[in-house]
Image (cartoon, rainbow, N blue to C red; front, side):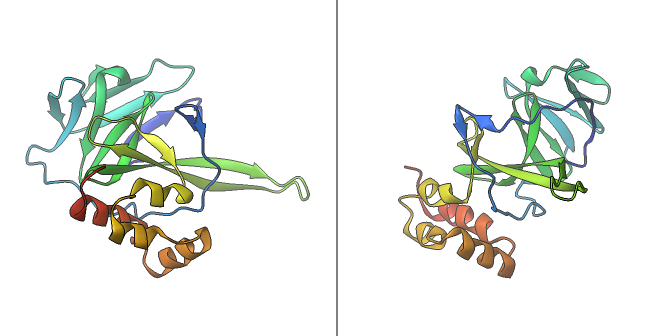
Length: 199
C-alpha cells in the first residue's frame, strides 16, 4: 500500500467496482515515480470541500472490528470526509473506505493498490504469499476510481493515435514491453495526457 503505517484488522478485498468485474491481470506499471507537484507545506489530508488539513504524521485504521478513520497529527476523520491525502512525494485517492496511490496524473489519473495474499496449492498443500496489485483509472480529478486491466488500455486512450499505437499490443506483447521498460504502460497514459484532449 503506501508507506503510511496502516493497521489492517480484518480487511475486505473488493474486486467488483461499479458492478463490473475485471479478471486477474498481468498488467504492471511503475509505482515508484512521483507525478505530483512539490508540496511546500508538507503532508495533508484533502477534505471533500477542497480544503486541506496540514500536518506531519498520517495514520489510518480500517476493518470490520474497528471504526474506520484516517488521522493527521492526532486529528481523526471518517474516510467519507477525506477524498485523498498527500504523504511525502505521493498522493492517494479514496477508494471505498481506503486509499489508492496515484501513479499517473492528468486527464486520466491512474491509481494502484497492493494487497498481501496467501495461496495454498491443492496438489502439494504448500502455501505461498504474494502481492496482488490492482489498477484503477479516474477521468478528471473528481471522477470515480474504476478497476481496469490490460485489455482496457486501448479503449481508455481511444482518439489519441500515438497512445493508441503504443497500447495496440496483446497481453503478451505488453508484458514484453514492460520487461524492457518498467514505465511503458505509464507512458501510454502520459502521452495521452500531454498530447491529446479527453473525448
